[in-house]
Amino acid sequence: MTKKHFALGLSLLLFFFALPVEATTISIQVVQMDDANVDVTNSSLLIEEGIMDFMFSQGYIVSNSPIIYNKDKAKNGMKVSLEEAQNGSADYLAYITVYFDREKSVAPESNLLSNIELAQWKLVRVRGNQQLDGGTEKPGQLVNIDDSERGISTFSQQLAEVINSAIKKKR
Image (cartoon, rainbow, N blue to C red; front, top):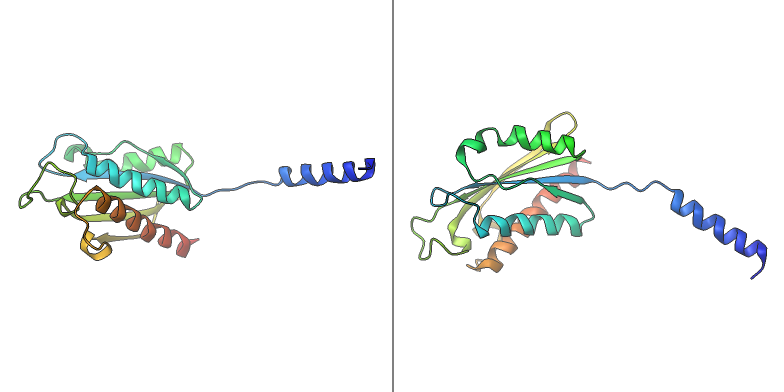
């Protein structure tokens, strides 16, 4: 290789590395509304994990705040989550409230999709605190019922797809 080719290759390499790289950042906040539990449940952790994994696989930089599981903390949850997202320079905040109904469950303590009544979500543009979209999803609407941890994971990924579609519409 001649010196000219080497210099040209080095110049092109430096040019490509000097280009700015920009990624969209999203902060995830899961709120667990579950009268039967006073602690974060594995089901809530599975939902959070599924949403975060999906968003990461779509190219987002993903952060999260600890799951809110106390009704008193949930009252100020959106405000606190938004402040944390602003401090982390996130572009979007996905605020997901998951409602559990274990009264008729055959195994209330288990990670069953049927223990989840619904998930309400809000998508907020952090800069300006503007709600862009939101909705309510029920497991039966999104998932062919697999009443297991895998069903919860599938539900969370499909919920993340809905949120991702909302982001793409608003860009």
